Image 1: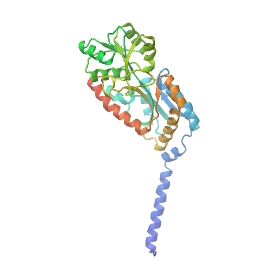
Image 2: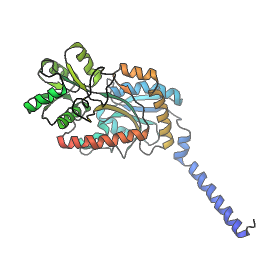
Image 3: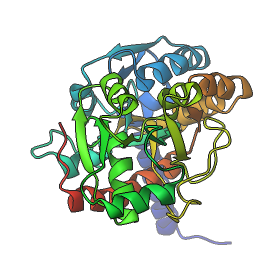
Image 4: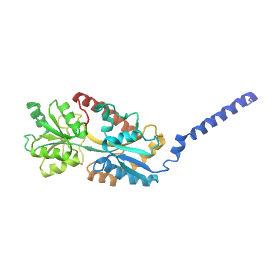
Length: 329
């Protein structure tokens, strides 16, 4: 095929321009850094020791370090500060955050928040989850969810429930119960789960929604009576217990979930690499069993799946928070 000299010149120029554009793209700081990721230690910002966040981070960290070939350090910070600290980190995948639903529900409960959960963070994976139990004092004359609802309707505003921390999943589980059952029970705030358990066990408070790991020992000892579990489906963490959804509150679901994040703007290749390594670890049979013994279920989702969960929770629980007038501590 004959091509004029002018046409050939234009083709050569176009080809050279395309090569220059591709080269410039590949040499951009973001792409170049992601190609060599990781080249230095990674930190996971977590709440203080003693909670599921720190426990989960310390299980993931050594496995991630081994697979990535760089040290992974768990950096404990005050609970109220972890999200703000992580929101100021560079968007390079070297600063990760492990946090619960308070991260994405905080905008509904606080004013002048220093971060935006959607704008500032990129989901990596939903790491673990834990259902709650609906437990009552054994002296309370109820043995089912429907009997508790009937008693609450017969005595509006007379039954009290205990929860440690306004806006926590423990608190929201109870408020979701109130809303879906159409009852009015009274929130009694506690500074920790220990005092809350003590008052329910002694009968000063009628019921509560503790996480399964904390509630099951009291149920097994007979100090508390379990009526149902808050997960949508039955769980190994509460064997033999029906769900609230199958006990008359169709669609009821409330769980404590923990996920891993990094800064928004982190190169997608870095997020994909982190997700693949974490999911591979979280889905092994040995790891699942270890988490079950600790009272949580390992998940390991894709970033897209986790993002959908967050948006769904913000919509569903955001409406509940607004309707109940909940403000975080």
